Length: 191
Image (cartoon, rainbow, N blue to C red):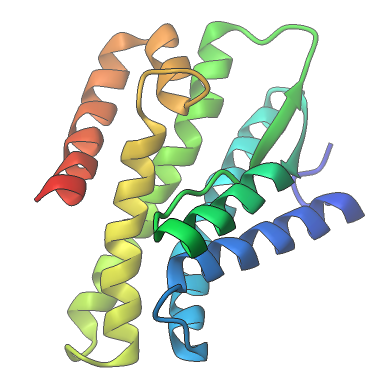
């Protein structure tokens, strides 16, 4: 299956999910500008993370496609609107193959967080290039932090997160990649 082939349902699910995520991250300071910043910074992190899982799974001959979890999106809206808490569980890439080795499964899982790290680097470059206070600077700073946060969150070694699959496959790689990212995530949450 080609990595460039998208079903109509997948396109709809990705679109709804990314718009919902951008809204959740832009509320309560919602404006078109804040929404666009969220759409670029968070939306790109979400989409590329999920599509990289999908791409690597297809490389291993598995059927894979993103599916939105509408209950999770609704829960995210409710938690944000009622309690001000940010929670996103937009869906996941569903993968099917008769058998995936632990290594294949681990590499599929690792692809998402590593994509967030790569995007964080791109956003960091934006921060360096553009003048503090400019729109692209703010996109850069938000994209940098949120992508490292998403990578760390996804590397938690508990089901259903990517980190659990990576840890099962290769504890050393999980430690090298996951521990610094989880440390950064915790730093962002508590300091």
